[in-house]
Length: 163
Ligand SMILES: [Zn+2]
Image (cartoon, rainbow, N blue to C red; front, top):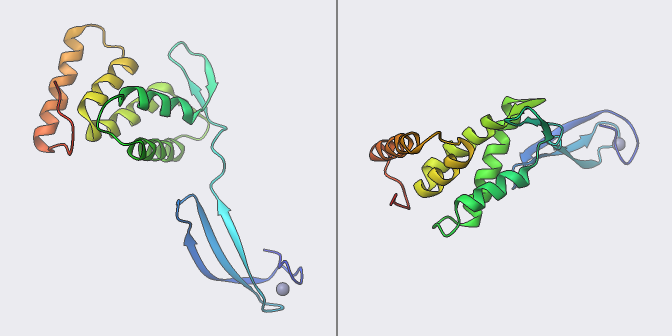
């Protein structure tokens, strides 16, 4: 990094840490020429180049608002805090951007959201899954519900009961 005081590009990093939100790395640097200290931030590249392939084959730019809106709808009147919803969005986004660079199937996003939601609230999970999976019939939906109930016997949920 070029020193902001003397303009020489020779420094050493004396401290590195993640910012509170975990979205950037803050580095304290010491210029090897003039010994002054300065700070740099390394940010995660704004993840809006990802393209989502929808079920009908059309492509739309990735939009985290859509994930948020879907989650809010699924969690309507459920005991899930907006902090918990935002945390799911962050986790889903992180996972999606780690696994895909250019294109991602909308179904993958749906699965990722559903997996997180499953542990958070069963009703919200089934609501969400019934939209993105588009169960063919009631039997499919019931299979899914049974699945969730079986899983929940191994891992008792913190909150929410199904029906
Ligand atoms: Zn310097």
